[in-house]
Amino acid sequence: MRGIHSGTADAPVCGPCTTPDAELWRPCPSCGQAERLHAPGPCPRCTLKQRLHEILGDGTGSIPPKLQPLHDALASTERAGTAMRWLSKGIVSTVLSDLGSGRRPLTHEALDELPEGKVVEHIRSVLVATRVLLSRDEQMVRLERHVKNLVASHTTVEGRKILHRYATWHLLRRLRRRTRGKEVTHYQLATARQHLRAAVCFLDWLEAENLTLATCRQADLERWTTGDDVRHRREAGHFVRWALAQKITRDLSFPAVRWNGPTQAMDDDARGDTARRLLHDDTLRPEDRLAGLLLLLYAQWPAAISRLTVDHIEDTDGAVRIHLGAVPVELPAPVAELALQQVAVRRSHAVLARTDSPWLFPGGQPGRPISAWAMGERLRKLGIRLAEARSTALFQLATELPAAVLARTLGIDITVAVKWQRAAAGDWAAYTAEVSRRNSS
Image (cartoon, rainbow, N blue to C red; front, side, top):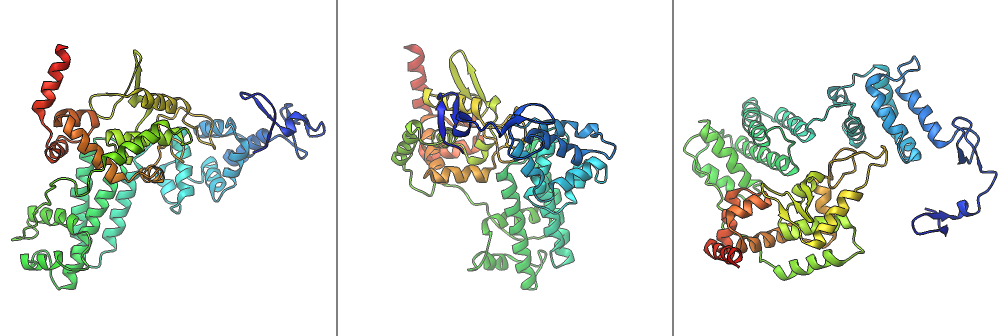
């Protein structure tokens, strides 16, 4: 960044532009535009276009029609230098050249054959963002790959059969049914992986004890669950109950863990102090302030916040509402201002030209939202303890609203809302009476 020497607040001018060197400002030999050229040859924009033709060309000087949207997006990017650096990074130019020449088919499956890593993920996201490739559920693909590798690595034939059956016909099938065509969330992916790891841990222990699911008895199960080095004890119950339902094992009892309320103390004072800081501290990034307030005031997990789109924000008749569940919630003025500001100024991706991203919190990959992990890290840097803050918010809201309203406005399951209301000892009758007083006044 160069220092500001003149101009206005809206149109600042740096030092070299205030007193330009006449020898540096000359027309580009390719496009004729006057540019600050530090070396002979075309300007950065023309250099980028030339490089794109070299990489994406099919050998006849033409760019394949399917790759034309990618070319146009990269050629019109706001930062030609950034695009050039990306093209020279790792295997980017090699992969794009293979796609342009036809040496590699333009499919997700062809990209899957490349070594896994962030560079390939980024190439895929750029192709999807420019609509060169159709979008697919990458979380589900990662889970399917994880299942395949984990099942194949198990030591016994019987164990591999059971794990394949449990993962493919129960975990993955149930996940597809629950998502109903929507993308798998980070939380759903993590939960499925934990259940699968728990099954592997239990099967490994059975093998070490010369036991199988068929020969395991209740005393053996309890010996494992009470061991000092047992891992994923709670998640293993899911696998054991499935094995019982499938008649793979018998005479085993692994009761579900009943939730009896929050285990941590509710610190509403700390929640209020943090919320006030986010409302009024202009030194913090507006997007971080908005995300933090959605957690502190509306009990939204980072995974849910990261999946919000601009369509979730509704500005009608002077009221700003956010759709977290089936019924929109009207935002108070300071939060509403932050929400509208985020809709208006959310950044575009550096490599591509400005795109109409649907995400309220765009991520590092074009066309993708910020990851749940990255969102959580940003909130932790604000001093927010995620689980404690959400529990405190839910506890407070459950004392004020009946479970049905809580579920419909926050987007949580009704059974979860009922449990929180019982934990908070919320009184539906008091809420009904309050609503009645409002309507009659």
